[in-house]
Length: 56
Length: 364
Image 1 (spheres, rainbow over the protein chains, first blue to last red):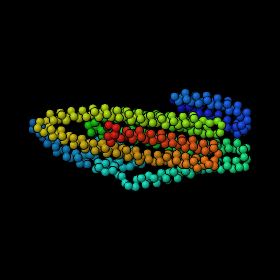
Image 2: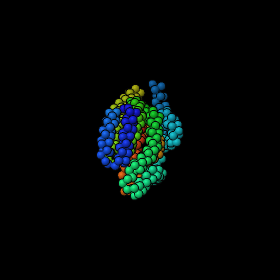
Image 3: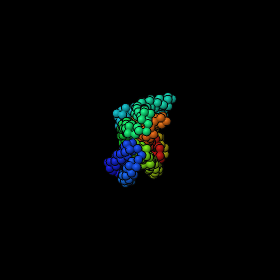
Image 4: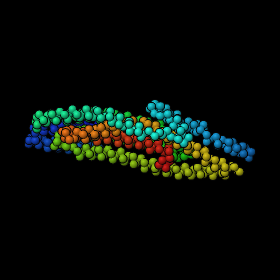
C-alpha cells in the first residue's frame, strides 16, 4: 500500500471539501453553488476511487 | 556397574536440591532472565526478579486496592484530557452561537472558519495521541523481542524443545505484524480517516460519512483479523509442538528406565520432579514478562482511553447547542480516538498472547 499517495489523495479530498464549503457559505444555496457542488462531487469521487485503489 | 550406582546416588542427592529456590534462580539466569530484568529497569517497569521469586513461591504481588487504583488513574487521565478537548470546542461553539444570534443566516463564512478551527485544534490533540500510540507500540515490540527468547529458553528447560523452537518464528511474526501492519498501515490510515472526518463535515450538503465509516471499519476489521490469525497460528503450532514434546519426553523416560539397571525406574520418575521445577521457572518467567508488559502498557492505554472518552463526552455535551458541523467533526475525532486505542490494544494483545506461551496458554 502506497501511504504517501493515499495521504495526498486524502489531502486533495479535504481541499475539495473546503472549496465546496466556502462556495456554499459565500453564495448560499443558489444554482451556482449547486453546479459547483456537482463538479466537486465528481472530483471527490475520483479522489475516493484513487484512495480505494491504493488501499486494496 | 559400581559407577552407574554412584551416578544414580549422586542424581538422587541432587534432585531434592533442585526443588529449593537457589537452583530455580540459577535456572532463571540460564534462561537469560537478566535481559528481561535490564529491559524492565530501562522502561521503569517492576522489579522482575522479585516478581519471579514470588511466582516461584506460589504467590503473586496482587493487592486488594488494584481496581480502586486503576479507576482513580483513569479518572485522573480523563480529567487531564477533558480540559484540552473542552477548550478546543468551547470557543468555536460560543462564537458560532453568537454569530447565529447577531447575523442570523448570513453567518456562513464565519461558521466555516469556526469549523476549520475546531478541526485544527482537535487534529493537534489527535497528533499527540498518535505519537503516544506509536511510542507505546514500539515499547510493546521491544518487550516482545526481549521476552520471547527468555520464554523460549524457559520452555526448552521444561523439555519442550519443539515448542521453544516454534516460539522464535512466532515472535518474529508478532513483531512484524505490529510494525508492518498496525504501525505502518493502521496509524497512517487513522490519520487519513481523520482528514476525511474533518473534510466531510465542513459543508452541510457535501458529506463523506460513508467513506469515513468505511475507513473506520477497514481498520477495526484489519486489527481483528490480524489477532484472529495470530491466535489460530499459535494454537496450531502449540498443539503440534506439544504432541512432539510429549513423545520425546516419554521416549527419554523409557530410555532411562531401560538403560540404568535396578534404579532406572526411580531416576525416570524423579525426572518428572525436575521437570516440575523447570515448569515453575517457566511460569515465573511468563508471569514476569506479562507483568512488565502490563506495567508499561497500562499508562498509554489509560491516556488513549481518556482521550477517547473526553472527546466523545464533549461532542455529546455540545450537541444540543453547537453548530451541527462542529458536533460532527468532534464525533468523528472521537471515533478516530477509538481506532487509535483499538490499534494500541491490538498490538499489546499480540505481545500478551506471545508471552502467554510462558504460562502454558494456547497449547504450549
